[in-house]
Length: 543
Image (cartoon, rainbow, N blue to C red; front, side):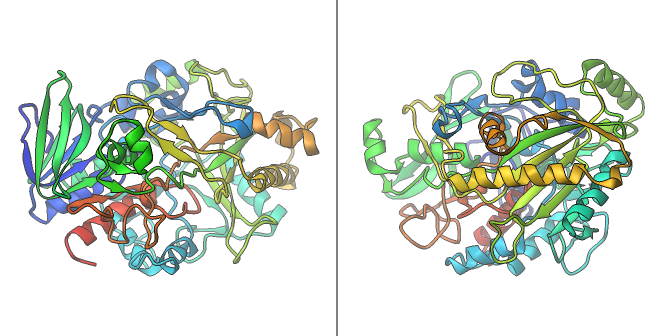
């Protein structure tokens, strides 16, 4: 478990990154009896800010708080959305982004995984990954063909939703004819249902909570405030990693069996390139000796949302400091008794637009009973929100056609890489966000709200047609679900093979969301944890 320096410098497995996938694979490998070191650049997650689910609001809204657990990345100017520089939050804390995200628990659509398998990624079909999902879950609804119980990650539903959230459930079903689902992570995803969260009893169930703190395998050593600068590759084999401790000193940590990169779509790709694995010319341009010429950093893609806020008298939440302060005081006195015991989101819908193919929903709606920032949150300042009671829907593009890149800015491991998701480069992506926004307006016209909807606060009903489409260019925002930069596959576009081994280097794997050939249909935290489970299976020879 976590220990104070001096740290060990040798283990069977060295896992780089303690995030959604990293904590998972590290915990499972150590559970097998192997000696495992997991490396985290950030600090401990054992604090109110990261343990309490409802603190997600101020954690992202208040720059002084955000910087405590975030790398502070921004994208390069996005030429298809008015040259905006988009925030790219990444958790710099034990648990990684699973310690700072919204805890929206979505497996994705079963068709996502069958498509991976159809492209040659054997062992990643829907039935195989379902077994990993069942193993990792402790679902309050109990085990069945699709769901698991007794696993490290507790999954629950908010027991005290706002009245407006329940009205939205019915209004969505009325407007679209979709089913009101008991479990969108079960047999069918299409429909609308109460949001499932990896939180329980007022506690965030990050990967670190489940696989490090609670699993607590005795052969796992957690090293925090340790920056990995490169993988040590000798004669074509990864033998360890070079690291920089918080005092600036450097050392090498040796891996007797394998090095596993689980630093996310930014970190894993950056470390590979710093280690000589990537596009050969790009590496040479930065003075890095080429070990393996691979398309590292290609295939970057991400979900985007357009936030729409409605004045709704059936929500009692207020996005101001006083409201939060009162909530914190009550939560400290009686843990689990306030809105801070749950995620800010309460309802999800998965619907089909005119672009949908193969009968798979291609639009996700996130409902939260709060006002939201407008027009965007690009600037690193505290943004005020409308003081009225409100419901906000994040109209979400879940299968973007746009593809971007991640490249090194320099050979300095502390330099932020050039992150270019190429948001809305494909016009079909903007088409879907526009169509989805129009559908949301139809939903909020529904009788189920019983007159509670008084106004469209943002973007405002005056924006119609081409004006709405143009406004979305300044309003659309990342859902912070970047994937794909170390693509898994069987052809020349792949960085890793289906067993997550880096092509051309022995003893090195990548195990995180960067390996996704294509993004899953919904929030990516649960799939990233599943990838950690499957990675452990593959490393240990369990298929």
